[in-house]
Image (cartoon, rainbow, N blue to C red):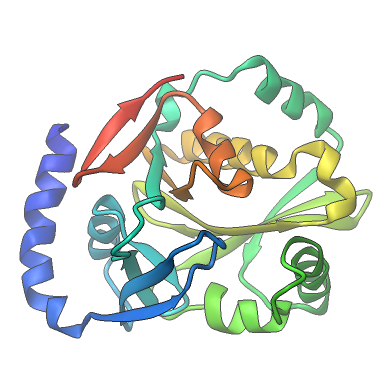
Amino acid sequence: MSLYDEQCAQEFSLLESQVGRFFAEMAVDCPYHLPHDACFYQALFSPLSDHAMELFLASGYRRNGNCLYTMHCSDCSACIPIRLHPLEIQLNRNQRRVLRKNRDLEIEFAPLGASDENIALCDKFLRHRYPHKKNDGKSYYEGFFLNRIIPGMEIRYRLQGRLVGTGIIDVGNNWMNAVYFYFDPDDAARSPGTFNILTMIKTCLKLDIPYLYLGYFIEEVAAMNYKSRFNPHYLYLDGTWQKQEK
């Protein structure tokens, strides 16, 4: 365990003793369609300090709207938090190819906003990716992306003015948290998820942000396991961030 992670763990232990009573378990069907029941351990929060959010992220927690949560699934441990250290990243041949393939995209950084354009693209993405669910872009913005906990923003990708992808991120002094990414399914050949991570890495390097949290790595789920192709990466296993290289 690095000195940074050791310090975060010690501070989080104190924080947890103060806020743990607000957390509760909530059982639901697995959101990733694995054959197990899921159990979210979560609590609602009002605004948090930058450092408090950092401690939650460093302890494997995620944000969903105004909730912070981690998984307490009794029969499954597939959801593993994953983190990148941008200064360490070594791009592979495919990732460099994705950069070249997307050189024609315009990249915008903007405040979070449930615009008609954003909602229409998010709707299209959800219909294509999760057709069995009654999801819609408006509810994703209102219940998932927008929040009162921590400052957030969007990374928007355009092709000749047309919106082709939007990344939702939270940003702190020395951390960035990838909340969600949706894109136009018609542009899937561009590997937009990989390009979004490459953009976040580049942004972290410009802003001197040393830790980039990518959510969960799930080996069995293609939409979640491509994150591990960035090397080195760190997985949160048995309460510590462990370096992995493939």
